[in-house]
Image 1 (cartoon, rainbow, N blue to C red):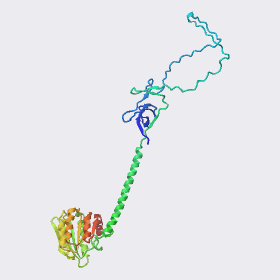
Image 2 (image 1 turned 120 degrees about the horizontal axis):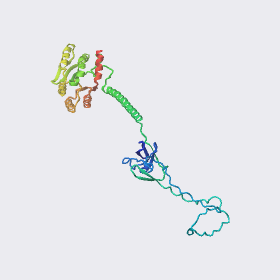
Image 3 (image 1 turned 120 degrees about the vertical axis):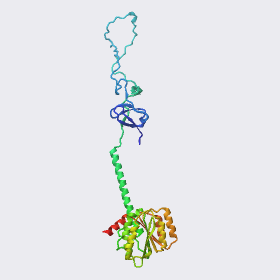
Image 4 (image 1 turned 30 degrees about the vertical axis):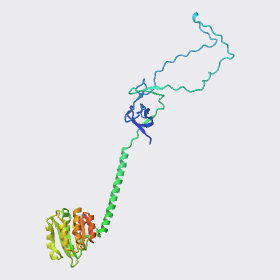
Length: 373
């Protein structure tokens, strides 16, 4: 790309550009024809109007011509010469001239070929008084209008580009979400289209019951959104369990673990009012010590422990739970996290032959709506 220099016409104010090779010279505005200087560096100097001294307002030729002397014509041979008194002192003897054999007639002899004498430079003066000499102005370069990027075109282009990028991000997010849902369904072994809160469906939240079960619920502040749903549907899933299946519910509260019943026992319909009352009495979410509730569940020595929580699992808590389960390798562990992810608990659950479920709260709400309808 050619290097150019920018300048502003001192005559019409048009923004111009010219090849950088003419820097330090003279140019003419394409718009108004003003003759101007070209600064060596446009960032340090401005173009100045250039004019002849006799016409400072605009460049042009001078209208005053110098006087031309009248030519002197020699008299023809034989012509009468007017008599004029001549003083003796002024008389000059005539030299003898030999007459030519032929009279001199015809065109004047041609001028011998040779170099044409150079044209005299013309004098110009800038607005600041600097004198410039030019050999004519016909070959002065013409500065053209500076090319301007159209704002509207540029704006439309970038808006279209931004729209395409946004569309690409939306499509990519939808694809990733669909793949994520498919991967979660395959990994967790439940179908989001199946309502696991319905009495006609086996299991609980996509899980099946073992022969002996302890359900440990972490009643933290975020559990308000889902505890009422579990409280309404958990007794029904216990009721449809196979004969001889035992249950114990342990709720981690700020006051310590709460139990119903005191040890895993088969669920009976006559104990439903007591279970409902117990679950309503502990409906005060806080930030309990979950490790104490898990330790109590391990002391009951069930075949499977199902841990339900919606807290963010920090490293210290995960380490405490891992140490507790190391002493009981035979007990299976199922982990259900609502609107949370914890890869360390996923590893712990798999190590203890259990399942790990990260359940969206929206899915739980949809299931509950299906039960109510």
